[in-house]
Each structure stands twice: as C-alpha cells, then as structure tokens.
Length: 289
Image 1 (spheres, rainbow, N blue to C red):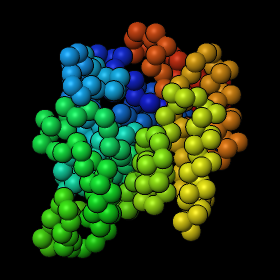
Image 2 (cartoon, rainbow, N blue to C red; image 1 turned 180 degrees about the vertical axis):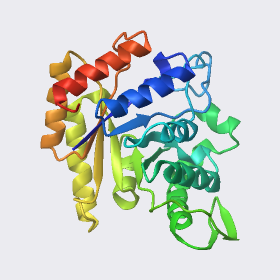
Image 3 (cartoon, helix red, strand yellow; image 1 turned 135 degrees about the vertical axis):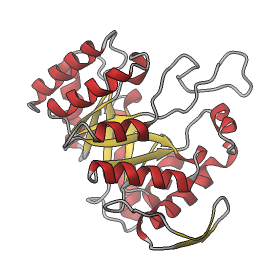
C-alpha cells in the first residue's frame, strides 16, 4: 500500500516557499505521493441562498494543483502527485487534458488525476459553467479526456463539448489514471462504471470508509470489472496521536486499500516546520524513511 501526504494548503497562508519545502520534505521522508485539494475561488458564505455547504470560505488560500505539481516536478525525482480532487465540471475539458498531460510529461509519468463535482455554485458561475449539470458533464468529460490522452485525432460531439477533428500533442507518457472522489451512492455508482479508483475522505472515520469501500468494490465486481485493478485511497485525518493514525492505516490496509494520504491540517500546526515535523514523526512510525 502506498502512503502519501496531503498538502496542508489552508494552514500555510499561501506561502510559495511552503510549496517547495513541503514538496521536498514529502519526498525526502519517503512518502509515495503528495495529494492536493482544488478550489479556484473561495466564496463568502454569509447571507447566501442557496447556502454553501462546504468548509472553505473567501479566507482560505488554494494553489492551482497543476501549476503547483509542475513546479514540484522540477525539484523532485520520485514522489508522485494526485489531485484530490480537481473539480472537473467547472473547467474546460480540453484545457484540463493539456494541463494534465504536461504535468505528467514534465514529471515523468507521476500524475494521478482525481476528479469530482464539488459543492461551490459560486465558483461554477464565476467560471461560466452550469452547477446543475455537473454530474452529467463530468461523465462526458471522463470519456473525452481518455480519448484525448490516447487517440491521434479526436472527433467528438457531446452534450457539453465539441471537438472537430483535433489532437492533443504531445500526449502524456501513458493514459493518465482518472480517479473519482466524493461520497454517496451516486459518486460510488459513477466510479464503479468509469473510474480507475476512488478517493475516500476521512471525515467519517476509517470504519465508515472501509464500509464504503466494501460496497464500492461489490459494485465494481458486479459490473464485470477487475477489483484488483481498481484503486482505493483513504485520506486519513488523525484525531489523536500517531498511534491513532497508524491504527487507521492498518485498518485500511486490512480492507484492501491501495493508497493512504495523511492529512496534517486541523492539528494546530501553525508553521511549515510544524507540518514537516509531524510528517517526519509519521514517517518514522511507519518506517518510511
């Protein structure tokens, strides 16, 4: 099982130096990957109808995952990168294909593209996309991305996108794996049909994630797809000490999980050094470095 870390973006004040330091530390400490969340804009929540259900506001800083990973590709050699998740339906499909392909090329095939539908309707409107059709659009986009990654010329006419005999050149070094993230039966059903893996967020605890993974695995198997080729990443949110975290990781490994991403946010770590020191403790406890 691969063990990675989550970039703690909302606790670093948008500091560009933190990107370099944490990216290098994650590699030097022996973690397999760095996962980054995605938001283009943060919106004011107060006096909003319909309300915004997510946790982030206009005060939370985010770096664009593709830009950040392209930078880190140039100063690392081994660690891989995962978007967890890129809010795909609010972005132009062909542009995502170009950006993802370049990150994969510049990193030597180290990108895992995790996508989802998001929750911020203000962000969708600002980017000129329809929040109400995001699920249907994502399904079409996944098909189109795979074609752009592999076919010499694409002629595509769908509900949301039209490509008239055009090509993505240069292409990624391999078909970039596309994982889904989210929660609920709609997300699981869509992933079972379309995805290469799923990212489970740890807010409900590892037992909840294990139960969801068991049900998703049954869906994948029921569709005649190989469970062994389907990945499962659990974003572990430590609630206590290192012992609690290692217990979560052990439980996820027992359940057949393929990846774990350790989140350091929410632990009152008020500096880059604090996050790196915590990751070093995790790496030591897990025998990574």
